[in-house]
Structures are given as structure tokens and as C-alpha cells.
Amino acid sequence: MKILSRSLAAALLAGASAAALAIPHVFLVQNSGWMEPFYSDPKSPFKPLVGALAGSVVQPGDALVLAAFNQSLPGAPSPRALLSLKAGRESVRPRVVQALAALDTARKPGSGALADTDLGEAVSAAMRQALGGKPGIVWLVTNNRNSPHNDQATAARNREFYRLIHDGQAIAKALAFPLRMPVKGRHYSANGLMVYAFAVGAEGSAALDALLAANRVQQVITEAPARLKPLDRGTVRLAPRKVENAPGVSFAQAAGGLLRADVAPDARTPKARIEWQLENTMYPYTIASATLSARSLLAGENRPIALESSRVQDLAPGRPAPLGSTMALPVAHMPDKWSVAALKSAGSAYVLPGRIELHLADQKLVLSQAFRTRMAELFPGDPLPDIFIPPARVQASSAVLPVEVRVHYGMGPLMALGAGMLALLAAAAAAAYVWARPRVAQLTVEDEPRTMRGRAGTTQPVYDRAGKQVAQLRTTLFGHQLLDVREGAQVRLGR
Image (cartoon, rainbow, N blue to C red):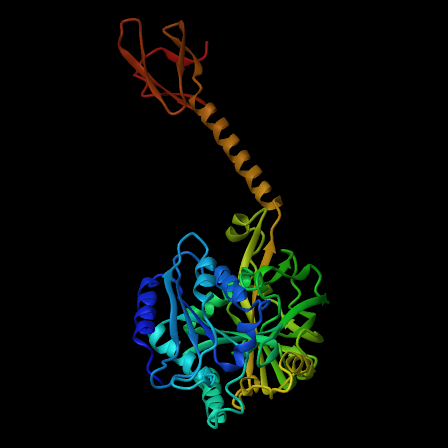
């Protein structure tokens, strides 16, 4: 790889360190000879597009580096820094537009010839020197020409660019946005522009996914992105259509791709037949053929899902195909309606998390004809870039569908339990009242009638006229008893 200019290296390292707690963005803008119409056409929306994209995706706290690139030569290093900053609350769009204002097509040193291009060199420089091997997102804005016809080493550089994207471990996710942008310059004309997004590392991939989920990119680029990488996971999507032979069970798609299964508490059907829509999410690739298998992991049980068809053929992106299946339900793990777990979930739902895994083996991918046609319209006369050819090693893929089984328990058992508890409390209160209420005892001591009061469980002394104890009176819930009656004493219960 060519050595970067000192100014760019310093700028990129400063941006990376400033973004220790955020995701840095590196914008690489091509200014080689083939880009001439994008710079010379007075109506070209090229520079405003870059400014708008940067302003939309770069968030407060993110580091931004803007650089122009062509092909590095002695005396003319590439990429070349144009701007480096840490984003604040204000949009970075005006700063980017200002930095691009004076940028024009580059020429070879000591010659009037327009500069050539090396896409791989620019991306490698951004990853190794700009990001320092750390996570981030590299945005590459190009006319998709890697110096055809004016450089004998073009084919070799194309292969290097392909290997960098598809075979390198650093780039976790790669997307391409082909845009219609007709421009006419002094020497050339063009119909389209390509914006690549290369997510470096798992954190970079997560950040790019978050930008797409928040429509940050779509606010500027309305074209659907072409996925270049990964092609071995998240390749298909399952959407439920109908559930059969399972009363009390229904499936629905929730936000974020979550599959939600709502189950009645008395549903005890062990299996259900579910009809799905299988959708290819690998635009712009068609799944020419693949072998399907699926498993469910619910409530700790790992069970195979019986598919009515184990083969998929000619599944174009965005065109769902029906897929029937028989799936085991975790009824054995559903708490009884009188269990503590069910009572705690009364009025809401008891949740059992899980997932469905779909595996595609012997996978063969082909670029859809619709995408080939679009590329031919945007870049007429140019061969399709090798980067859009799926790697031969990608012959299998998988997709994970998160599942949430929700058992809905009504308020009946909880209300019945509450009523029982109230009845017990009432009985306890009544018993306490009965226990604490003073009871009246009628006695006769030496032919003298007396009235004594005592609470249940108490014992009181009984005295004669002389003040001597002649007995003890014990009070119970069921009446009174005379205890320890002195010999010869005239004392009895009643009148």
C-alpha cells in the first residue's frame, strides 16, 4: 500500500482518537480523470450529495475525516486530507461542502494527463491509517471506474479491491448504492455515481445498521442498497401467514423482525402447522438454488422443524415464496394457571424467549437481471465490477428469527385467590374478635350471686366474703370452668 501524506495521516489519527467513544466516519471522494464531468458540469449535484450524506450520518461526538483520492504517485500522495473534525451539535454539512468547494480533478505530477484511480489503495489507507485498525465506517464515493483503458495494472488492482472487500476480515459489512446522476463535462459524460459503505469491525457494522434503521442514509439516498457482504447470514426472512391445527395459538410479526407467538393458557396442542412467506433479503442476488433446514429453540428445547419443501429455487430478492412447516410448541413448559409464575403474569403475559434458525446449504447465488440492467443504464459501456460477483466460497448461509412465546393469563385465578385470601382474613378477624371479646360468667359464692368477666384463655381467682381465695375461674372459647376449688368452699357456676 502506498504511504499517505503526512497531513492526512495526522488528520486521521486525530479524528480516530477524538472518537474513542463514538464511531468515526471516513469519506473518500474520488477526483481522478474519469470523475471530470462530476466536477466540471455546473449543474452537478455531486458535491452537495456528499455534504448532505455526511450531514445526515455523522452524529454529535463522531469523528469525521474527508479526503480526496485518485492513485498515489511520487510527489502526488493519495488520499489527501481535506477536513478533519469532531462533530458537535451543529450539522457537519456546511463544513464538508466548504471543504469540497475548491476540489477539482487531479493530474499526474509533471504531466497534463488526468490522474488514474486505485479504489483498493484508498480503502486500505482509510482502514489502516485513518482508523488505525479500529472500528468505523468508510464511505467511498466513486464513478465506479478503476482506471480502465489508461492503466495496464487495472485488472490487478480490481482483484486487490475485490479481495480487500470479500476476503478481508476487517470489513464486516459492505453495501453499495448505485445512484442516477447524469452529468456532462468537457471531456466525458456520465449517467451514474456509486456510493459504497464499508463497515469496519463489529461495532462499525452495528453502527451502519443503526443508521439504516433510523433512515439516516435513506434521507439522502433513496435507492435500495446492494448488499456485498455478508452473504452467509441474515440472508432470508420468514413471515408467518397462517397457523393451522393449533387452537389458541397465533403468530404475528412485531417490530425489529421479532416473531411473537400468542398462546392461550389452556392451549395444549403439541404441534402446529404454520405457513410462512420466505423472502430473500440479499438484494441484488437471486438464490438460484439451496437446500433448506430449520430448527426451533424454545424454552430450552432444540427441535427440528419439518419443512414441506427442503429446496428453494430462483428466489429473487423481494419476492416471497410460500413455505409450509410443522413446528413443536413448548406447551410442556407453560406454567399452570394456578402456578406462582402464572399468577404473577395475570392480566399481562408470561414470556418464553427463543428463536428459529434457518439454514441454507449448497447455496448458489446469481446477480439478478434487474440489477444488471440498472447498472448498464447507470454505467453504460462499463463492465460489471467484479466486486458484485459472489465469492465462490459462500455456499451456505443462515438466518435467525427471534421468537417470543407469550402465554396470556386472565385475572380469574388471581381474583379467585384474592377472594379466598379475603375470606381467610375475614375468618381470622372474626376469630380474633371472638377470642378477644370479654365473656360473662355467673357464679354463686356462699349463696351470694356474683358476675365476673374474662377473655378466652384467662384464669382469675375467686374470693369469699373474707377475701380468701376459694377457687379459680378459667374462661375458654366454649365457656367457663372452676379450678382448684378449696375443700368445703361454697362456690358454684350459675345462680
